View 1 (spheres, helix red, strand yellow):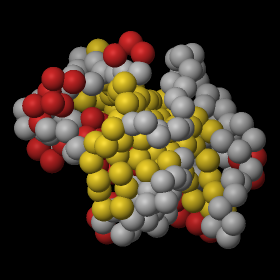
View 2: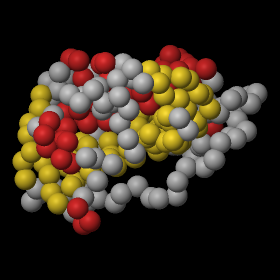
View 3: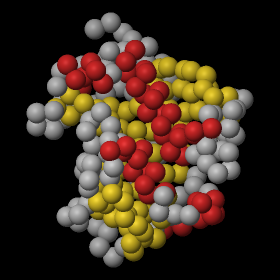
View 4: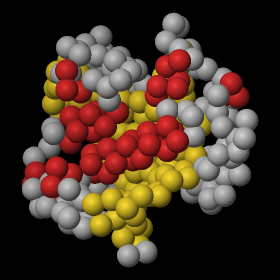
Length: 243
């Protein structure tokens, strides 16, 4: 397989649909932009959703961390860059950042896998992952936040019924919509007060249209709040550390 370009950079505008009540780009909008950039770049190097469907595979994200340094205002211009890292046997890493006037606005590190549609087991990256010179710098070496998957003593934050508008091409709840539903459990004033600088997420089990998920919260060290999403069987589907 010939070598492909490991990165993609585009100029992007902060549109009104991306903004919160303060006319600033929201965290879900940043994660949407990341997913859009990932899709555009994946298509350009032959590992997009349609290409994987031909092989009976579909992309899923297992871990994502976003660090937020600022929230650009509506109509401001950004430079958005995504790049891939060398793959492991059944997973790969994609990173992304947006900058404004040379300053980093936000940075995402994420781990992906491609599941087989017939048995939902991970496909081997070597069968489709592109060869590249991987010119960009490696990601930060800070490990993803370690969280206990037991939320038995956590407090109820809110409930959410998964709707048709939450479902993506994989047939399950889109990753960003977990974040939207979670943040929707807080008031606008609470979100302003939290002033989230980092959101570390793990996607554990898929949820589908009609499922009712319960968001629960617990305090952790260093002022971190940990949130879990439990399905109707009490199984953990998603969890996040909010910093």
